[in-house]
Amino acid sequence: MQDIEPYYNWRHLYVAEEDERSPFYGRTYSEFEFSQTVYNYYIHPQWDEFGSRTLYMKILYVDYDQEFAIIELIGEWNDAIENDIMTLRRDITDKMFKDGITKFILIAENVLNFHSSDDSYYEEWNEQLMDEGGWIVVVDLPQQSQYDFKMARLTNYVALMDFPQWRTLKPDHVFQQVDNWILRQLR
Image (tube, rainbow, N blue to C red):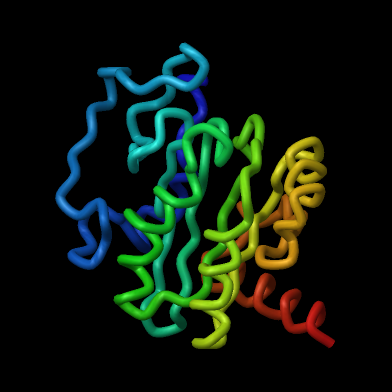
């Protein structure tokens, strides 16, 4: 797992630790000191800790004009024990929402497991964003985790999308493709 780095091909366009509005503004990273773990396996030091012991993230891109953020996740998304969605909401996305971000693309191809609890934080987040014309899309969540996500009926609030070619596009094109897909789903 230490070899899995956050996607870095957009760093010339956006760097969260250099964005004064980012929750990770001013953070410094070591390329050599591995201290964070998932399942007792060290993860790459570029991943950001946000309060969960099992889920880490990296804000890959934010566009304040188009009001969207692309966030990559790694680890275990565990609402049953860790209440990761509450932590993600309170410590990250609510702060971004105050700066006008209403559309969230969560890249979840490195989420190893998903464990659900109740849906109240998802429902609350969805209502907050929908009032502003926003949405939440989880991209490339592994099939078993998608199954668990659907069984918990969280797709009432969060859309799941398979989009493996996202890495071949620029962030604004990723946003346009996801936004267009959402619009087609609403018809």
